[in-house]
Structures are given as structure tokens and as C-alpha cells.
Image (cartoon, rainbow, N blue to C red; front, side, top):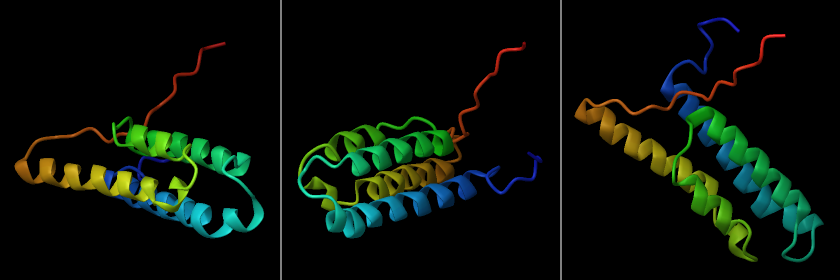
Length: 116
């Protein structure tokens, strides 16, 4: 991957994370209730796991992701866009820290592969 990738800047990672969160929440609110009955939705759980991993890779670990993950397990709470709220809150905090002149790490997580 070249160094000038669009996900190199924190703003681009936040933009990608917000789009992902909005799409995931919209799918869970609009599409899944049409196909899955009841509170136990395996498709919803799989989507939440994928979104959690993708947001972690884009923004790193933030405490806002924990309540979002847990709330999605409760019946009826899927109608609240927790992923979008979590990313928006992380972005708000990042902007406050950036305005103060401090640095907050939102670098993507890189995996180290063993040398074989």
C-alpha cells in the first residue's frame, strides 16, 4: 500500500469510520427487522462484530466502543445508532484535544506477521 493512502490522515480515518458506523446502524434499524424475527439476530451479531473490528482497526481502542458493543446485545436497543454515536463522540474528543494542541493517537492497528 502506498504511503499516500487516503486512510493516512486521522480525518480520513474518522470519515471512513463514521460512514461505516452510519451504514451499519442503518442496516440494523431498517433492513434486519424485515428479515429476522426476535431479539436473537445472528446476522446482527455478525455485523456488530465486523463493525467493532473495523472501527478498532480504523481508530484504535476507545472506551466508547464497549457500551456500543454491549448495548447491541439487548433486545430493542438495536434501534439506537450506538456505533454512530460512539464514532461521533470519539471525533468530538479528538477535535477538542487537537484544538488544545495536544496529540491523541488514532492510528490504525498494524499486525506484525512472523517471518517464515
